[in-house]
Amino acid sequence: MAVDQGQQQASSESMATVAEKAPITAERKVRNDLETKLPKPYMPRAMIAPDMENINGTSGHKHSNMSVLQQHAAFFDQDNDGIIYPSETFRGFRALGFNPVASFLFMVLVHAAMSYATLPTWIPSPFFAIHIKNIHMAKHGSDSGTYDTEGRYIPANLENMFSKYARTVPDKLSFKELWHMTQANRDAFDFFGWIASKLEWGVLYVLAKDENGYLAKEAVRRCFDGSLFEYCSKLQKGAVGKMG
Image: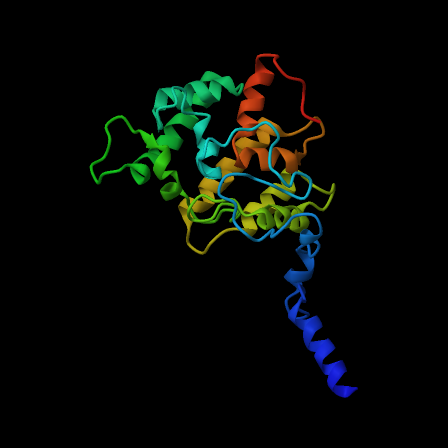
C-alpha cells in the first residue's frame, strides 16, 4: 500500500504545473487539457495553425505548401514572386487600413530589421528585399515561441499564452495583459528582441482589437497564419463582415 501511495505521489508530481517555491508558476497557469480536443498540441505544425476551437486551422485559408511563418509574411508579397520589396510592404500596410505615415514607418522598420537576415547571399541588397523562403532566419528572440526556429507553429504555446495572461476575459488580452506578456517573454540583454516584440504586438493590437479594447485569441491565431491580414484587407474594402 505504501508503495502504491508513493507511486501515486510521484506520478502527481511528475505532471505538476505549479511549484510551491516558484509563485510565478501559480500566477501564470498553463492548460493541462489540450489533448482532449487538439491532437498532439505540442507537435509543431508546418502548414496549418490550429487551436482548441479550430483543430484544422483557418477554414478556407490556402497554405500553398508554405510554412505557417511564410504564410504570415506572404500577404505582403503583392506579386507572389517570393520576394517582398519595401513598396509592397507599404502597400500591404495601406491595404490593412494604416495611414501613409504609419505605413512608411513600418516599412522602414520591417525591411531594415529583416532584409539582410533573409538574403540568399552575404552581399547586402540595395533594394532591402525580404526573401520569404528564408523568413525563418529573421525570427528574433523574446517572442512567444509560437513559431519554432524553422517557422512551424506550436499550438500549445498559443493556448498557454492566453491561459497565462488573459485574466479579465478568457481567450482575450487587454492592452495591459499584452504588455505583461511581452515583458514576461523577454530574454536577458536581448534589446532588439524586446523592442521588436513590443512593436509587433502593438501593431497587431491596433489592427485587431475589438470595440472593448481586447485582442481575441482568434485574431492572434489568424495573425500567425496570415489569414487575418487577408480578412482585414477585405474588411477595408467592405467585402466581408466584421469578425465575431
